[in-house]
Image (cartoon, rainbow, N blue to C red):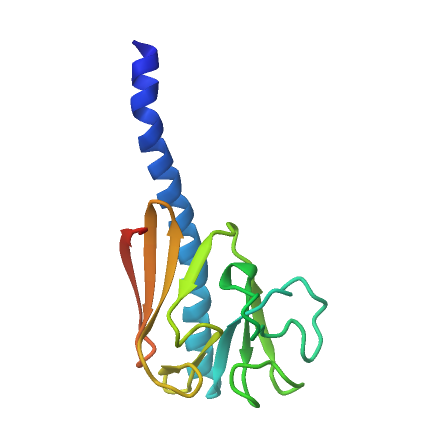
Length: 165
């Protein structure tokens, strides 16, 4: 009898754990995006969040930097900085580092084509990637649980639940 109950509970427990992991990852990344937006408004400067594989690097004027290479992914980590030079790149002493993040779980974060490497927030709170003001989504998946972080062109962030495909 006990074996039957355990076999019925195991799949449910896996779903609970997946939901917990994807929720934690979503909270980490959405907090970073919200911080960037609020810092942009507060400072009156463009603030960028970019994927970065060297978040443990010694902090210098250019490190940790943004990874434009396709080999780096959002689960590697991200850097938040005041972006005063080349948008989407931490490329000088004027690009003040605000915070770095590395997700607690290194599971899949997929992006749409617009926010593949970075998202910038402007002093009015709006967002852009590669100079294009458009909506895009960061999709987080810990099978079977999925969350989508929708970033609108106005900079507002919305979280949607779903199921990994």
